[in-house]
Image (cartoon, rainbow, N blue to C red; front, side, top):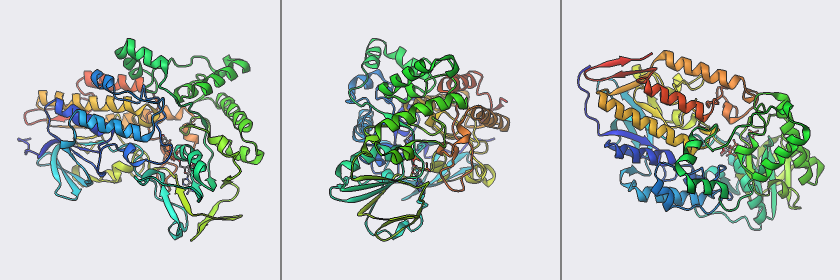
Length: 544
Ligand code: NA7
């Protein structure tokens, strides 16, 4: 063993979004030295980059907020049920100021590589611009939807008009007044931005490959009931979120679809549409995520709703999602999305009927027609969950790269660590609830688990930690088993890696629930880091 070499800092954290900011604050509180490396020139992560019109969170602000500090909660008031991007960015800037975080963040710094030095037992981290630095622990707080998917549309570089990506929107904003605009993509980013682009554009053409399910957000003031519950028992409310299925307090539905009459099902659906939350619409009946017939009942109600709004029958049919089950792609919350297609200057192009053949100098050509534009907006999504992690050249024990190890899909224990990469931690990594949950709650849980772990190791005299192969294999099996009993694997979703050509098709998140997952993580710690191998100068421990 021998004494490890001293690193520049105890911990390097990559990313200054929700996760990186809280990680830094938490580490400082425990007396660890830490440096955060961030590509952007300010804090914010997702909320720094995604500045497109209509960009909002899809979890109510009463829940999509830090809960670790009651004083922070009373110092900040959200203005809306679903905050828009500028307000969430201001919040994260406020958090950075309040805890004086910026002095330990290196902005405009991209992490290019990270190599585990087995002799010195530390991470050597390369940055652009350099110089890099060394750290005992390396935390990737890089977000689940942070690397835009490469544009896979032929001729895309030929277009001579203006080109925008929702995920990299210009800071000064864009004015589409009087312009002919084409939007490609109808995920959440498309669905949020299309109604607002339509308000400005002279003509708007939406290119849709797969329709998504969306319900109205009914944005407005933050939900009164949650505010009252937080005012009377803040801790109880936050605790219920931690022990809920998706990280927002809610009793799960107990009846199956068959146990309800058609009238009862319709009433539940209408109530959830009126509530306008993902938590509500995803919990209509207990078996909607696992039983095709129960899911069809939601789909039918959704289709009826779309047909009742969109006047042109052909457009309405194109907007009805028919090739994936409800919830197997993240549903969207919108403000006037379907209504937008009733406007005379808005056209939907159904790429299932007429695929894009090429982008040209002046527009987009499909198998049937040619469209001319002044501007094209791509809302084409992300290399989700793994893109940002394998995007850094990470080399672990024996020269193995994480990219090679994950060539057939991510392999982790608890979504927190990967065997062969000691002292590398992933915040909301693949095989953790992450994107299936309220990210604020999942981020806090991971940050606190990692912080507790580093403190426990310091107290016990350990300096390295990594999962055993048995634990990692077991967690992978459990993840796959959980996904296999749901309808998720049937969908071509980014949850399945299906949106990125060549990406292995595996379900990328843990679907057992925020509550069950937290119980496992707590138990692992209580049992002395069950499934981990720990080493120190004086001692080592394997707890398989
Ligand atoms: P999404 O949900 O991945 O949506 C991307 C959209 O772009 C989706 O409709 C895609 O159709 C479409 N797309 C992607 N590539 C193409 C090509 N080549 N041609 C035509 N259409 C294409 O990303 P978002 O940014 O909207 O949302 C991501 C998450 O962020 C969201 O779920 C929220 O959690 C927040 P496809 O479905 O692949 O047929």
